[in-house]
Image (cartoon, rainbow, N blue to C red; front, side, top):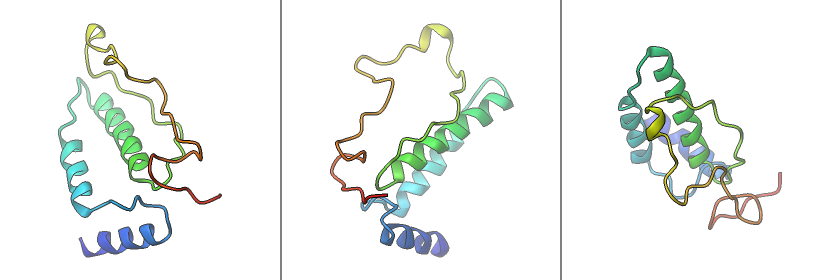
Length: 106
């Protein structure tokens, strides 16, 4: 974990990692990834890749909202409706970053 902590310090120092990141966040992500279940090995890999893309964007200090890997079909067709109020695309703040953090010019 020492190497991961050092990498996190370097990324935060470079302005790439959100300032409130803690190593427990990474442990939580690893635990969550183990909980991904799918109907086939291919769907599980696809779901894990999408989950990783979501997490990487969530950890960025200034997410660019790059395209995510394709979604895996995990629920039956009747269960795949988005929750009320869910947006189909993220809405960045005025400078293109996440709420509450200032993004450096690229």
